[in-house]
Length: 302
Image 1 (spheres, rainbow, N blue to C red):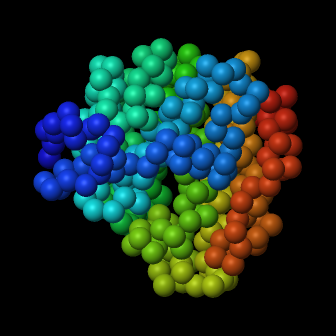
Image 2 (image 1 turned 45 degrees about the vertical axis):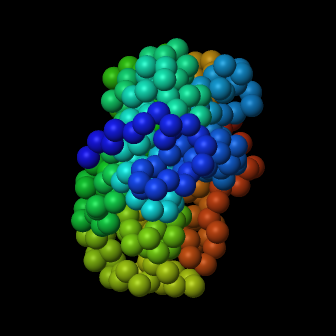
């Protein structure tokens, strides 16, 4: 369904409306969205980066999180909000966006030549979340990551002018791995929304039942399953890490930070004995910076 919304519905004003159509006021303010960068597993836009690059990365992050809000957190008709976002994303490419965070995205997509089809995949992923609640196999989950995670890395490569096919392939491995690690961190939160991102085949293999996902502590079987998924994500990170070697300058710094955050998250799982229910699994700053330095110097190979 495509909504045809009047301009007044996108003004950013009062979100109350009698016809049920979404308005830009239905979305959180930019500052609240960008504040979530501090809770990410990796440095989104390192302060060492020049202002112009950080502005582009902030704009992209704002868009990604706004889409996630519409698909995961927003009250009411989430499908309508996602349709609304897709309409305004098209407007952003025309320089006429109504939602403030998509107005901020306009110069980024123009200056960095980010294709529309890359960013719209994030909206499609959140539409899929409204319908698909379980993934049978790991390849099925990777197909979802191709919509929900991989476009993020591709967009970042566009920011640095390095969106080349071979590099995008490496980036896809990194982004899918980061997504899987986040799923392992959030298994209880996701289950409370009736979503399970641990492949059903793997849960059966380890003898895990869904009610275990919201226990006070992870069972021995669930810890084994989480370790299996985290180890697999770590191998994917390692397979994508040569991307750092292929980059230079600010791009190398930024991408090394993303991979470092993933490796530090995997280390945090190990420290928590792979129990994300009994422990708040978050990467330590010291481990992240140590991994970041090694990646930058050695180019992802050691």
